[in-house]
Image (cartoon, rainbow, N blue to C red; front, top):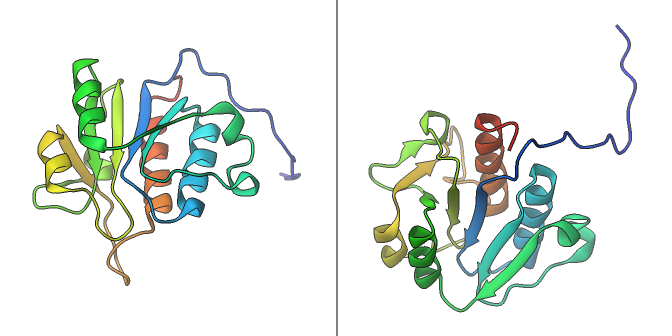
Length: 165
């Protein structure tokens, strides 16, 4: 069998719009938000709600900046309450007591993945609003993954469970 590199292979067609959106605590690094936008674009996620001083770096976000709606808000808890009213399952990505390994979690089709800040994680107020919390096991040091890396893994797991949208 021979393998040939395909540059810019066309994306797979989704049969329906993804029911996943990402809600971010204020991120310190614009690189992290830009990387999350790029991942969201690749995975067909249509919206990210960011809080704080959200700014993209175009050379990192690439086409994701054109295909993902970035909405900014002042504070995350009101956003989470609204998303719950709209029927989203609120799933935090955080290391907590009683969190579930990412690979064991069955996502709801309509999910808001709630991402914490780089150092502080998710606030107690946000944690109290969540329906579930998932974490990604770490087998070495440091103690946790970079927020953009962890978000990418969680988004991929959602897409694995819902490959058609």
